[in-house]
Length: 590
Image (cartoon, rainbow, N blue to C red; front, side, top):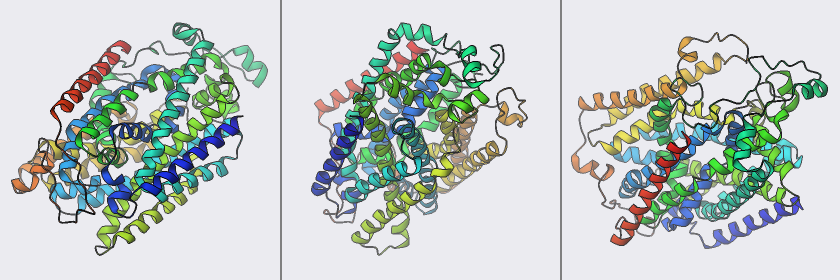
């Protein structure tokens, strides 16, 4: 029954993909990469959500919930806010600029080539070595646990099917399949959450039992023949602040000041300047539909706190001896990782709580999450490579050549992704989601600072942006390399790392990178030649003029930036509702 549901899911995706590819305009650059800029707000909102929610969210959010409580949910509420920053500050500028990629915006805003090439190259490296690899690891972990497939062959099959859909139809196919996958993910995860709460006597039953969820020493000694002491400092007791979202400023996991000053600016890169996310909003038929899409995605982003984080906490209650294993030999025997096994929380809950058939639905949900994230990354990466790098190398390239190159680059990404599978197997720590956040926070703050300065201040110059980003990126990469050289100590071991690693939380370091980049950009800009005012007006916040273009109307279509007064009022009412909801949830859970 489970395999039948998975098979039906694959058939539905293929049918929708083939149908969408037949009706999509794949013979033009904007038709292939931006879906003809003709998508409505519902499809944009659904695509924004599933482009963000990959298998690493199900595995990572649930695992962090099982390990440390609801604190990890702050990222989802943060996204709710930043999506509206994208819709009301960034997207109007992007649409007025008439750009297709984020590196293209920097080139048009500042002139010159080095910023565009630098950002395009850095983004492609991040996609290949971070986003794709993490998705493959977490998706493969679930498939291996639930279906018993060989890890390497299952990942290869999924990547190839995803790439096939992306290559054949471009962004149109991606957004149509994303719409189905959004419904599937939300419904499947909601059903699992309900079943989980029933198993632990509701929310208050879960809250009480979670705080008592510690492994049984007698059980561990009898089954694994391991001596465990409950007074040991590594014994996995639940945190006393497990049901508090933002914690003290010196907390080693979620310091509220570091989250607001460091993590939030770092997240601006992902939600407002990352090609995968922005490309969905740029496919809108008008500014109103783009803003409506960010609102829809914002409302959906309320759900992961309840359908991903809390199921992980439920899993710890139900399977304490495995999910809350004692670091060291016990954890290694459970999941072959000495640091922890919380990443097994979501797969365990699916396999042991849901009935036959329904398990197949959740398998399909996880496959949907993996495929939707990967197809978004494949499409956006091919867009950046084709329009920002290849078109610059081959200025005389025809549309046909660009289409072929874009498809071939996706095939290259597939090869790199499959080659990375053995490397992914080495990353089996108990806090996958936090590890990825730390790595990202050393690279993204300078990029976010450059874009924010460029959009909000017309006086920012190319030299200011370049040297600000260069200094920030250099410091971030230096710390990133350092954390790989000086690895964190295992539980119970002495921390011998340099003090700037052991004493400064990565969120505070991210804040330093962000504000230092802005300061350098401003100082250098004040002493360098400014661009002519008329050349930068449509690239800064507050301008709504459509972009001028010398290309033919058959090739370029710019979404309308004009808004119906009634629609504008409704959008602002919805904006106030979503922001109020986010603030309320922050206060409630903190």
